[in-house]
Image (cartoon, rainbow, N blue to C red; front, side, top):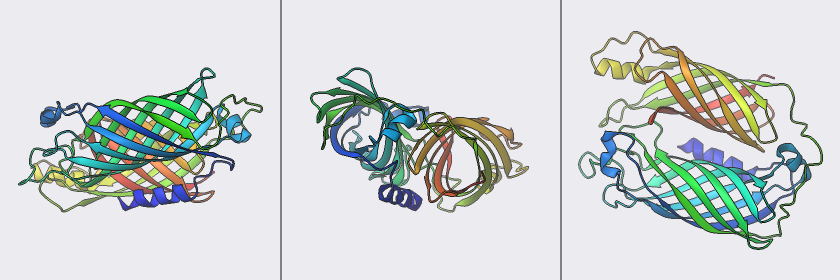
Length: 356
C-alpha cells in the first residue's frame, strides 16, 4: 500500500496535462447497495452503504488539450467517507483516490463525463477470527479502492452545476491477505459542483491531435507477495516480466496489449497445502484492453487468458487494472491489480521502461 501513497503524491505534485487549468470543487452524497457475488458473503446482501465525498479538480482547458481529445479533460483527487451500513460487521471507511474524467458537451446546459478512480481506503472492521469472523469481504484495514462512474452535469450558471452519477465502488486488498472476497456496492451520487472561474463548455476542436504517432513498446518488471491461508500472516513472493504495446486512439484514450511471464510461489504453496501436486510455479498470459492517459498519470483495464498454465488453479480468464505515473520520458512506476471473476489474485508494484 505504500506504493499507492507514493503514486498519489507524485501525481498531485506533477499532474500537469499542458498548463492552463481551472480549479473547482464538488460535494456529493451517495447511496448504494452491496451485492453478494458469492454465497460466502451472503450475509452482506442487505447492506446499503451511504457516504459523503469532497472532490477537488482541475479542468485542463488549454486548446491543445481540447484538440487532443475533442473534450474538456478533468482530473483531481476525491476524499470519500462511507458508512458501510452494518457497523458491527462491515464498519466505516474513508477513501482517497485519484480520478480522471473526459467531459463532453451534449447541450449548452448538459455535460457528460466518464470517471475512473483508483486509490486506497481505510476501513475499521476487518475480518478477525475472534472479534469479527463474519466479515469475509476484506481482511486488511488499508485496502485498494476502485470506482467507475458515468456522470451527468446540469449547468445552473457558468460557475455552478448539479451533478448526478451512477458509480460502481469496489474495495479489496488485492489478494495480499485472505479472506478477500471483496466488497462491491454500486449506487448513485448527487451533489453540487462549483467552478472558481467561469468554464466555457462551448469548446471547439481547431486542429487534429498530434499524438497519433507510432505505437510505444514497454518492458516491465513486477513484484507481489500474498498469504495462502485465512489465518496466516506469512507471505510468498510473485515475480514477473511483462512486454506491452500501446497505441494512442485520441488525446486521452489508448489501446494496450501485453504478454507476461511470472513465477507464482504463493500459488505453488497453496497446492502443497491442499495436498496436490505442484507441477510448476511458472505461468504466462496475454491480455488486451483500453486505458486513459492524462498528463503523467495513466489508468488501464484489460482482459486476458493464460497461454501457459499447467497448474490450472484459477479460471483461465483474468482481468487487470493498472495505475501508473511517468517519472520521465522512459521510466514509469505502477500498481497493478489482477483478478479472476470477483476474486483478486494479487496486487503488484511494477517498474516500466519505454523501449520505443
